[in-house]
Image (cartoon, rainbow, N blue to C red; front, side, top):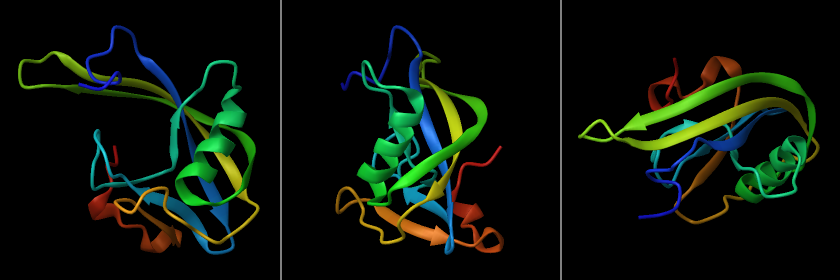
Length: 130
């Protein structure tokens, strides 16, 4: 069991809604929660790191794209219960709008995918959208 499953407290994280000339940047998740679904790049905030620095770092690590945060967008809770209704995952995610400074993409690991999508061609059937 990894340290993000069955947490004692919500885990703070960030997500980057990154736009560039080729559209919006998405990552196909290679681990739970949401394995196999497209989402915005993001992840946990490291100790001593600001949220905006975390967005820029996570986007680069997951996609190879350098970006600059423009503004805060929203806060979102990801709460996933297991079969016994225990909280298996709980993330508190702050999402930021970011501008792509580079366009070449490179997935962090071979199991992941990265892509640019025009807004009218988002893979909505492979995304968790509320």
